[in-house]
Image (cartoon, rainbow, N blue to C red; front, side, top):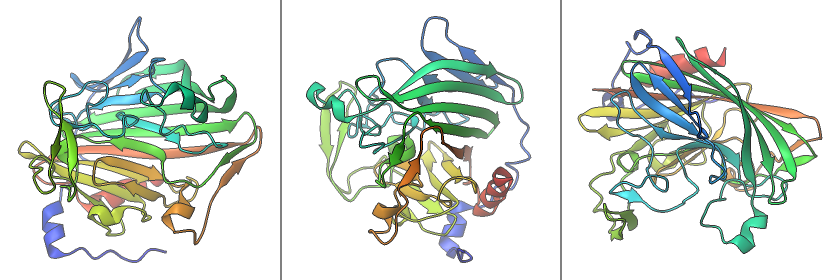
Length: 347
């Protein structure tokens, strides 16, 4: 069991308390599939929240971009729609996605346009076959089926995912349930890169102590020296009290990344579910902007002291459930409230 968290006075002041969030009036959600494009748009109230993109040009389906309630974009633009100041590392980090680095030796996580053709056989694709449900109302629902395949189109896994979208004036929520069914015997070997990933906007990165590469408005990449990045304002905190870069490789029921966009505090929180494999998850949370929950990287995160190495026999399945919360206000949503939301999600 995890110990009771004691936050410092400074951290408690920074995080503040936002007890009215749950009581916010829920807004109507619209889910609209494009006629001739492989995309589905999700609107909360009259504002675009995100789009589900699944074109053949992408190696996996993604939610992109992701908007805060004010309309501010909280995911990185690069590589689909680069904006000035975008970091240009890791081209496979696109919006919000779900995949894994090692499934029967195939790398689904790192596959992107940047991989040379003669190396593509080492990688995997997730191909969306059909949108099985779209509906709106107090909650929006988007469900789809997909295949996890290799370069030869041979299938390893069948994916069935349902996402529920909801929101209010200052908050957005995504509840994701993904079922993976083995089409053949499958091994998820313990690795660091997995499973639910988000690549956040530059402003939500942790200020870096290392040189970084960014793109300007003409597409020219420049190097910003360590300590000179005036845009990044982010920081992590977990339910167990780990903060900053120390959140990486730790286990917790939730992890929050928070920072400033304009005059508001904006946070992204991912909540793990008690019925997920290897709960509570390990956090692959990096200061440069990768925010991921990876329950299957145990050997890496414990320096080999323990391992998971999830195996599925043909016909067996495994389910992953996550809640993503985007909150925007004068103060950041409090740990007390996030614990309450995690309790509710767990039921």
